[in-house]
Length: 630
Image (cartoon, rainbow, N blue to C red; front, top):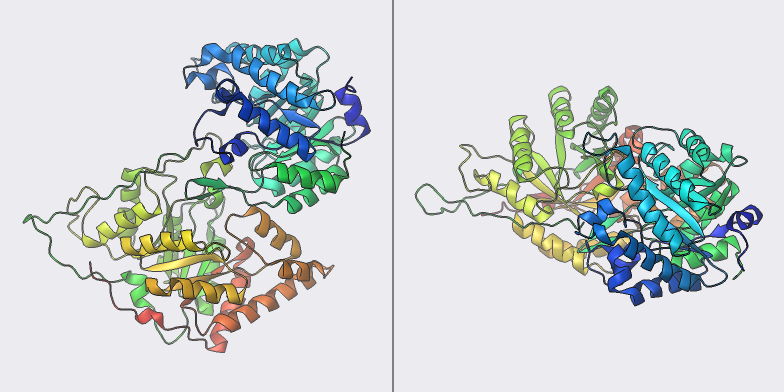
């Protein structure tokens, strides 16, 4: 007979499982397929996933029922099968759990926006939760886990429904705290915990969201309540990245395991993983904790060939845009990235741009809501910088936030404001946003966006209608070079160049040999490549970037070297020395440098630019590449 869950939790840390949904996709389930229905359609597959987590060391496994409520199942016209799906999910998890492992009934939010509108009442939400929870309890679960809640009001309704039905079955309540231990609506984690406990939750914690670092922030804040309520943590394995048709989560098992150990020191008694966390992660958690065994949203490729008024196309010579054609070969070109602020006071960024211009930077690049975090409009900020400072600005434009009509309007706006360079990118998944209810559009991907901007450079919109003027944009594209498997990304870069790209900005690279191999791998593409340079700030900063930011790989030798210094200032000094040495090694044969300001500290980037200009580096000279002919 199993020891009561709360008694076990009081005696020791309990290890939960990882993500069922994303792991099922990894197993070959089609992206976008409703995974809850697999309890009926593919029960052996679901059972095998539960078994894998048990073999990896999980002491608690969750039912595959996260979205099995009437509202979410309604989109599949399966709202009448709530009881059937949840009963099947509970039976599969209970069978895999056996006599020693806890089976937890997973209950996610309904997907209804809060505050509620006139068509849906609080009792409708409560009825939906009661319908699902009663089926899970009937199926024999040992625990209820209410997880991934964004809205406190909805969580409190769910807790009330659970408590009214559960009897002695404990209730775990978990919310998403994207940053600074606050919900997307700005509610503090401690305040949420206090209300959840008052409503009847036995355990409170954080799950999903923006990776390990965000979960750590939430646990640090919640640690003041460790004597009041048991705490839990189920973070994502970093922030997701779309590679081809796959969603990749970068946080490695060992990195997450170290973080889990720290979270248990902060009071976490129930730990596991959310999206992207596999049995390999859980096995590593088990070792670190010394636990003994007991949408892709549719991407549309659209490109309409422009038709001349005469019904025929004449050859047009297209330059490389105002930015690239204006760069000089006498010195290595330098772009410096700044993130627009998360508020409306932009004075600091404009002053930083002025300092960077004075230091010798050729252009400022301005990201558009990186990692789907809300920031000030980069196009407006680019206009201020051009107007006040006089330096070129590269505006990042994502396919995530606008449909085709909005993208074309933004391109027209950039032209009207005098912007001469656009970086065309698909954009980070909207799921990592710090704003409620955000969804991605993705009418185009980055290749389609390059074609769209190239159309405007020819004087036409996507429908082939003449615009009466031609734009003069330098079209930039992103490139994530992966030393271990570069072929796919090189192929995509070839497609981007063929579609009309004029220059490349890479993800940060930290090894001169990798940079040399990259330049060799793309030399046939014949457009200038700005190599990403990221000045590290500390050993912890290096670990975070390596494990939680998609596309960044920092060699273990660098991370170990930084951790050899106890003092953060010594770590920073060593990191800057490394960055300067790296630039000195590569500056004579790369096309240009793309410096990403760490934590938006433009002073660090300005110092680097001054040193580079004093050294007189000239770069490869590939700015002299002949103009492209359409």
